[in-house]
Image 1 (tube, one colour):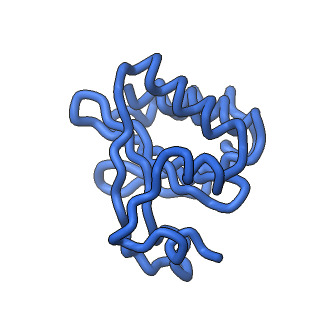
Image 2 (tube, helix red, strand yellow):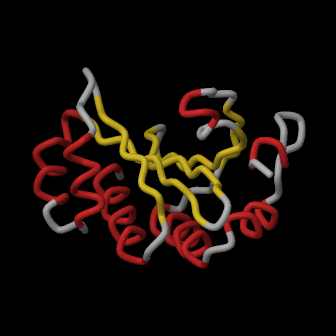
Length: 142
């Protein structure tokens, strides 16, 4: 069953229900890292986005610091997607940082194009190396 079907707009999931659905230790590790490092708490939001056959639809978890989005996490069965914006003003630093990331993250960064203000990187967190890349990219945002 799809995430958006399990928890429709009028049924916000608890943190434990999300943890159970994604079923990966990377979820708890990233949440704890963001909370401790950036002293911020998550907010829950529902997206009705139908793009990519509803891939982005459903409840997600957002982290902000000082009004700036650090990342948005989208629960998936057995993993999660960390959507991280990279602003145009941080492009030079991001170009350097991405060289220290894994090939998956480098490829995704190269494929995505900057708009007027930013580009977003939807990283599927399925391995420890990708989780480390996510942490590094969040550091750039902060």
